[in-house]
Image 1 (cartoon, rainbow, N blue to C red):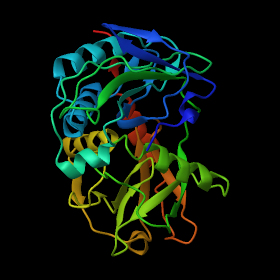
Image 2: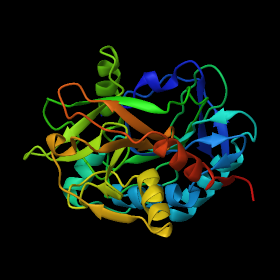
Image 3: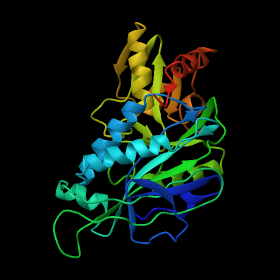
Image 4: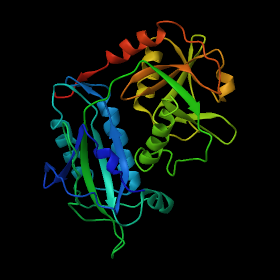
Length: 317
């Protein structure tokens, strides 16, 4: 899957990482570019939640994609964090893309391979669009099929935040090629969500072959059954949500019972359901057309949103 030009919309710009620096680039998007790994988080007036977990997820996914130069990745990461202004509200995205050499799904099918190439990336801040270019080579194998990599930072002004969401079950085929990575399927999942928005739906729920709840297209799902906080079981493969993990760890620290539950939409009737992600934090699900009738407890999501917000720390040391 090639990266979408829609990512470079108004309110965002991309910088590429080249020779140790982030450089804005307004060149055309390379049609051969495949987004292999991405990660994003909310920065509000220079403060961010769980940035170390985002770093760990990005690095692990990059290694699984076949990018083996952790020193370069670390240098890029530090440059990306340094580039985020300490004012306003931002939703930056770090990206590892592949130029040629097949897609991330191809690499996953091969079991992954080390790639010690230099990378180039694109980054952005503020209004307007820009795209990055390739800046380094190196990949597994030899010959024209070897991948070249690009590291980039997409700086985006954060959209308005919401406290509630409306969900609907996804009724099409499995849209994910690599369920455990954030990146290869990002454009596909975002397009599904955006199409659903025309019907007043904020996100779609992905279901397993047995109808069990796995994930949202752009959110993770948690629910309260009485005083127990539940999540889908770990064997239902999905992106490891930093926000869901943060909420569950916080809940355990406060003495709340945290469990895993294999549940269909019908099983959630009478529960309080949350859609959580790095942008919005916790959104209480108020409606699920064609799905269960939910029973949110007044004030609970707002209380936990405040608790989650209290975990934010300054991005700069």
